[in-house]
Image (tube, rainbow, N blue to C red; front, side, top):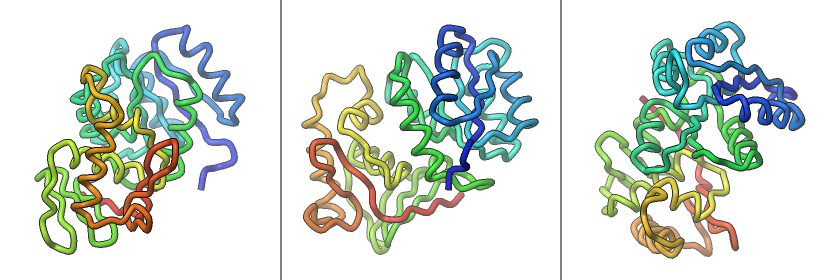
Length: 239
């Protein structure tokens, strides 16, 4: 349940972004606290307990990744979105491993950020580790061990290519959220990969075969016509 007026903490040292983004988010119904460096972000997060934190990766005094690491080390599980100018899939993986709930490349459409904020808040579990920070994800007999890079269904190993496993991981960490093919392409393959959205559909077909998931009557992955996909089974995270 998203509070009527959630407090967001926006940490970015680019005044052109802070000066335009903060009023935009205020108009969308949020109360926004703005800081320009990682040390201030850490202090503000501990003092004001916002519902969500937006961290630019490249900031003075302490970068966004170190700020996030210190928050998680202090067992502060406030949902966090990282902003960066690097679009490689390896960067996304690092962001999620460090406990980010989502990841957005600069430059970005403010409406896309707003959609991500609302999605993260919907799936947030106050005071608990987020799905993106959990090492074991389970859903209706399906288990994904993110450390071992292995999926099982009813206790049996599911044979998947690395990219199909990465697609499954992204969907399971963003349950009940409409995820476009373009977003999956960016998240799993990265902007540097010269692939089209058909590549995503190919890996999705592989996933469905492996999970015996009928697209006409899905238990795990629903197709959203003209848009993308949604993981529909309830997901639980451990560790």
